[in-house]
Image (cartoon, rainbow, N blue to C red; front, side, top):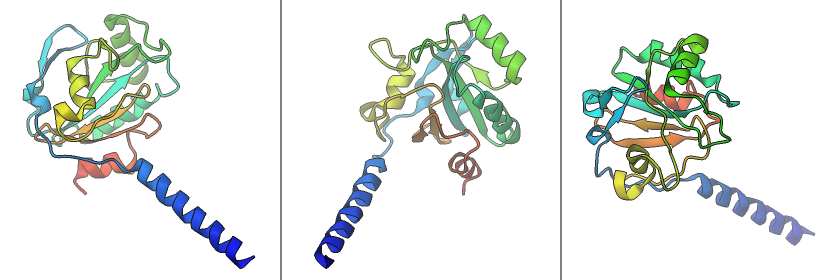
Length: 190
């Protein structure tokens, strides 16, 4: 009986270790900066990421018909709170997850402004995965390109954290809210 209890305890401990390791992300060292990219804004203007040198950047793929769409409110609140403190948010609309962003860039902008008062920078609609993935998302998701880690965009509102030097820091899955402790502590430098 004691042996069974000890064995069960060992199995439990090993399970916890395995689960913990599955969440651990092996990080490397940055080898290139996001500041190399130019993309188009939702209004069709060229936006040069080099203009963001010295700012922390939160990049989010967005969609207007998603269960996570209310995160626009939290993103805007975060931007209003920290946007003047060398921090910014960049939204990239994407229609690759459940066809939840079917609108044109004009319709997307109108929706975000009217419903959530979005004032942070929104870019034109892009693809964040697959054969037609945008160059900036190739960089965000490939350790070969960013030097830090690889990832795949799982759903709308996945968040990527970029430091003041333009290097990838980490990412958070959609269910993590924009105002979560991890993001706020990172912005505040804690």
